[in-house]
Image 1 (cartoon, rainbow, N blue to C red):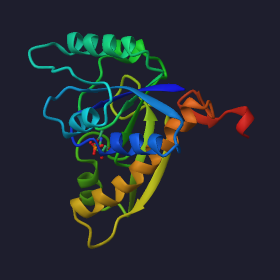
Image 2: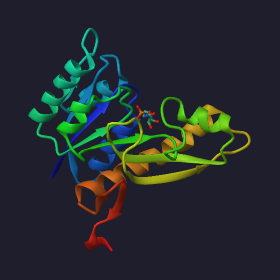
Image 3: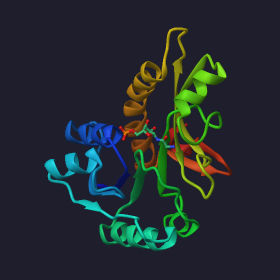
Length: 203
Ligand code: GAR
């Protein structure tokens, strides 16, 4: 069974959706560790309540490299196969990305490469996009940039505000993340250049 390491900084609804998909048997994986850089993240409290191995590794007073070194050590000791960033609001150091080649994935609330960075839903609204959505992608050394595993589209409505649009995107995120995790851990896809393609046996 694939062992997942989840990194989060806040609410943790994507983590909860993954945990729920596992509990219901829809996703065949186990959560080996949940790590937060913030002790007050609601998501880490949920992880504790669910009896998962939940660890807070604060970044205060540490360089990015020193903080990441502690996270890398925790993930390695938990023997994770795949690292899922789920609202983890810190940039990863190059050393972190290199420690787990092609084994870190992220979810982002836009159709990348549109609207990377913070407040992607607000960016889409202000730009006047008619379609936005969410993207699950492999993490490389650039922000919101690595090969795309899957995307789900969401229509932007005239009456949308940031809150209503974010809620509809989040609904899709919760479905997309577990689907993408299954594709990666089952070996259903492979990275070719910056593209993710179905594995030959899937075609
Ligand atoms: C999600 O919308 C996720 O896509 C976004 O943060 C939110 C976390 O929510 N991530 C990013 O913007 C990363 N660039 P959650 O804590 O409820 O999962």
